[in-house]
Every structure is written in C-alpha cells, then in structure tokens.
Image (cartoon, rainbow, N blue to C red; front, side, top):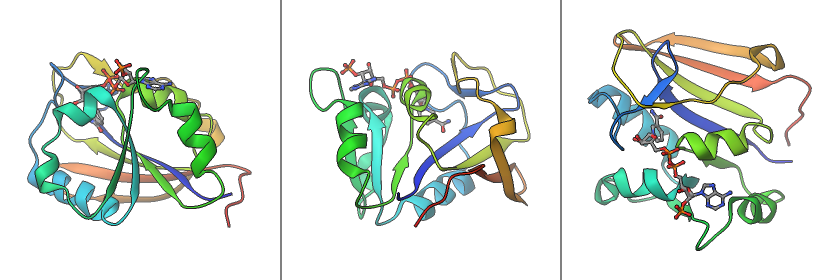
Amino acid sequence: MKKIIILTAMTKKFIIGYYEKLPWNIPEEIEHFKQITTEKIIIVGRKTYLSMNVESLRNRQFIIVSYSGLLLEDVLKLTKLKDDITVIGGSEIYKQTLQFATHAIISIMNTNYMGDVFFPNFNIYEWHIDCIENRNRFYVLQISKIGVSVM
Ligand SMILES: NC(=O)c1ccc[n+]([C@@H]2O[C@H](COP(=O)([O-])OP(=O)(O)OC[C@H]3O[C@@H](n4cnc5c(N)ncnc54)[C@H](OP(=O)(O)O)[C@@H]3O)[C@@H](O)[C@H]2O)c1
C-alpha cells in the first residue's frame, strides 16, 4: 500500500473555507502547500479546484473529481497500488477519504478566522503524532494512522 496523504490547513475550530475560498492569505502557508505538492499526484474536489490559482501550480498532476466526471472512489482504486497520492480537499473530499488515509499534514492557524466550511470530524485516537513544527503564523502537525504499514 502506498501513502494516501491528507493535506489541509485549518483553524483550531476546524474551519477550512469561506465563500468558496481559503479564509486566510498567508504566503508562507501557500509556500508550504507548494513544497509538499510539487511533483505529486493530487486529488481535488471540483469546487476547490475552481477556487485555486492553478497557473501558479505547475509541476504537479491534478486529478479533479466530479459526479459528472471522475468518481473519487474510482480514482482511489486506480491509484491504490501505484503512487503516493495527496488529497487536498475540500471538505466533501476529506470526509470520504479520511477512512483510507495513511498520513495527514495539517497546518493549524494561530489566529481565528470566520468560515463556512469545516474539516470533517475524525477520531484523533486513530492517529499517531509524528511531528509538530512552529511556522510563526501556524503550526504544521504531521500524523500517521496507527497500525497502517506503508511500503
Ligand atoms: N483550508 C484548506 O486546506 C482547504 C483545502 C481545500 C478546500 N478548502 C476550501 O473548502 C471549500 C470547498 O470545499 P467543498 O467541500 O465545498 O467542495 P469540494 O470538496 O472541493 O468539492 C465538492 C465537489 O466534489 C465533487 N465530489 C464530491 N464527492 C465526489 C465523489 N465521491 N466522486 C466524484 N466527485 C465528487 C462534486 O463535484 P460536482 O458538483 O461537479 O459533482 C462536489 O460538488 C472552499 O472554501 C475551499 O477554499 C480549504
């Protein structure tokens, strides 16, 4: 099994989006996103994809899921045995992928922001904390699912 990595950024109240966009504009967090996703295969929901400035995000392969196009469940089946994949949201996609995820990289904002989209509930006891880094305006928490071995 290869890694299925959830990549997200949230407030301490699990807010991830506001009016179809990110609630914040933090260049260092965008750089972090770019660094993690460069040369990677990325799964993204149709709504999140449309909200992104993809011109600035070359050198990565986006797989955009939509009920009128590629289904998430089919993409997960196809990519299972080949490469690591990074799942970049949004909320609907995280909700359906959490059960399959092996790792998560979570930026946690130091400040509160207003929002209307939330990261789904998940059971933190299923996860092991691998690393926490302070990046000034946010923390980066890296966790892996307990009991899952990855090649
Ligand atoms: N802070 C963060 O890290 C972060 C990351 C990502 C997104 N966001 C924010 O989250 C918000 C968007 O999230 P969202 O939950 O509203 O939308 P989303 O998850 O980005 O996209 C939802 C769309 O994905 C498609 N979809 C969902 N499940 C599917 C499945 N099983 N198979 C195929 N297609 C499927 C559907 O597209 P169709 O309608 O075309 O069928 C659905 O409308 C925005 O505010 C965005 O900025 C934040």
